[in-house]
Length: 334
Ligand code: SF4
Image (tube, rainbow, N blue to C red; front, side, top):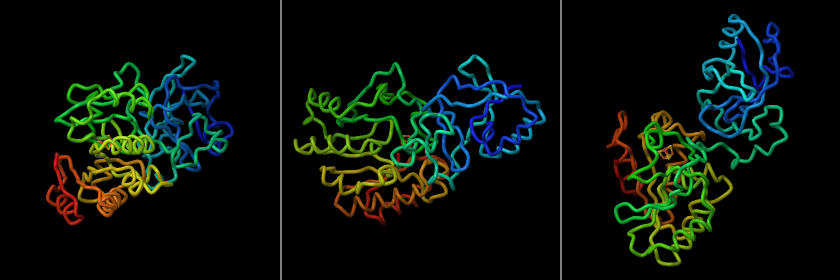
């Protein structure tokens, strides 16, 4: 059977000695895009994130070696038959998830080639991977804004720094009949031009929400907020509260305040960090604490702050409400 390897099992890799009974067949690339992640001394590939074709080598191996390699790759990897660009299919190891202890040290390798990791500018936090189930999905309607309950909701990105187990994106293409997958992220000009055609004064609030984490596009968010604020329009941000982790070089809360953000609705989602990790599966280590800090800072600068939870098993609504109230935030269970 064929095995496709893309990291340390390759010919020049430090673990290639494990492949001594294997027969090299050819160099190859995957037929579909995945995300090659630098985990330090070795890489992994995330199956559900489309970044680039993965470059590697195909070997012919027997079952004994395959089982040995299953043990070597360990519990964080799973194996799946994968189509190659050259028409072959081969077994390939994928990461189940980025191990929590490595979240601070994992980076996407945009080229999809392990050897090129040092040649690429992959160390900046902004290059860190942000999940979008259907990154830049084709054939969708590019809904930039949609009306619900006298509010106007803005949809500026499908990227997110979490993968919540209850995320609506996993079961639907949108909400209230609006298709919210984007074929491309709208520019600031796209948004302003679209909003300029609407009677914005008729809405109770203009809300950044949509099918992703709005602070993944902080500069666009801030500029639109300032533009709306100048017109006396009330603006709210619905957020997972990871903004400081996504934008580590910025004082996000003060930037929001300066732009004129009136309110934030922060997804608390759990009464403790352990449950939060389980339910929200954030990509950054320390996301629960960062979310709480974000909410506290918003309250501190005078932004009206609400914390929300989704009613799913294990979430202790009363305990979550207490966290919100103790902090000085209002609370809403969805
Ligand atoms: S934070 Fe929101 S958009 Fe992101 S995965 Fe969770 S529910 Fe989905």
